[in-house]
Amino acid sequence: MARRGGGSPASRPALADRVRTCATQHRHQPPEGARTQPGERGYPGRLRRRDHTSHIEIISPMRPLLLGPVVENPAMSEGDRREASTRTFLACAAEVARLLDLEAAADVSEDRRGRHLAGAARRPLLERATLSEEFFEPLMAAAVYDPEPSFCRWFVEPALYAFGRRRVMTALLGYLRTGTIAEIAGARRAWYCAHLPLRADRSPAYAPSGSRDPALDEVDDVVDQWRKSSSTQQRDHRASVSHDQA
Image (tube, rainbow, N blue to C red; front, side):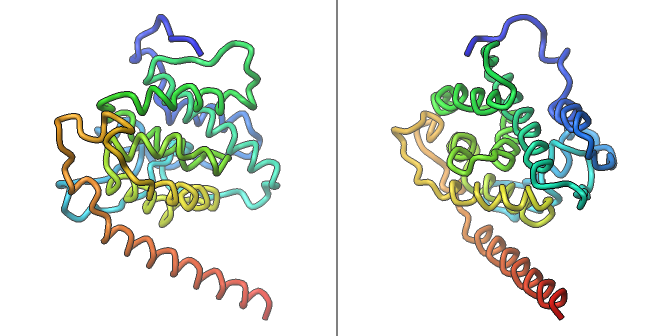
């Protein structure tokens, strides 16, 4: 893994545009939706946060693949879905690596490049005392789109330390409520990682100012909302299966 040289961040397309470019290389391309609102930096459905303890309104998940609602193509085979997911994950991991000024080695194959970038970013992410705001959405997207359940922790954990458990879980709740089938599955995988215990000796981002604000990790209401949404989805799924069998 090498440090990236040359080119200013302003000269590079936004993550949403780069992931969309990956998606268009696949023959199954969902339709493009509405544009983001001003100030959303290419990420739809940003979370409106009043303060750490107030209610957080879920608008929609932070979806880098498309802007606006996503309609999955039912004609896609499992192999097609896996290929599309791999491409999306690569773009998300590449954005995290770009923010860290890292780039993949030239001899890494495309199908392993996303995992290579994720592995290279893992330690630097945990070693930083702070992560700028622009890290949050790529970290969440990479965690959700990571095809390997064992590794989405690499993106969730630094987000927990830097941004707080409440904000991370709220983002995953957004994916659960309005995501595609693949995004819902990814959010469920990442949800388990979002319960990781936090330790002061694990990352300097735990308390960069000397103490950690407890409100960052207050999640009782978010967990309740997750359980309700999950139960509703399961109930609707059972009803759908029963209807199909009737």
